[in-house]
Length: 115
Image (tube, rainbow, N blue to C red):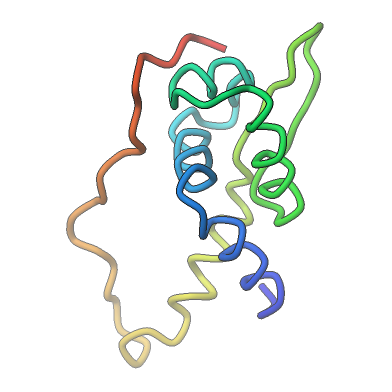
């Protein structure tokens, strides 16, 4: 990953709603979630989501596809993994320093309906 790409990804994630959205998409896996499911799970207004999804897509962190009348958003795991690799490539003098305890899951205000 190039430095400019890492900066773009980090900038996109440097907003609490976008970070929550991205973590929820990662949790959902490659199948993704509908915009409505994300809005419901995080208690966000659907019109606000479009802006946040666009920022994540421009940074290469999310994709979108149409299924009938629904827009399905999914995390781009290759970009996420490249960012993690970029951030840790010189960590601890080349030794392993992976976290020992996973972080908390994305906040959810309600159950995520199936996509």
